[in-house]
Picture 1: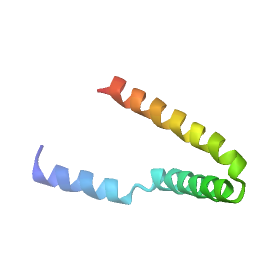
Picture 2: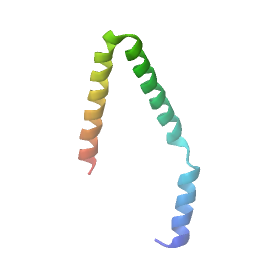
Picture 3: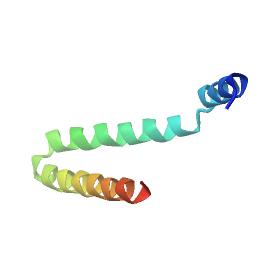
Amino acid sequence: MTLPRVLRLRAKLLRDKKGQDLIEYALMAGFVAVAAGAILPSISTSVSTVFSRVASTMTRAASQGS
């Protein structure tokens, strides 16, 4: 891969903002879940279970992709 091609790819990646919205929504959902857990301790166990399941699913998916 030549240097100009690498520089064009780098510039393209820096301009691409498609995944930014998804990350922002995921962070917002996480903050809401933490706030809800702090306000309503009875649901904190459920929220923790959901986050644990999501984390284990993502870990499994990452290990299968390699």
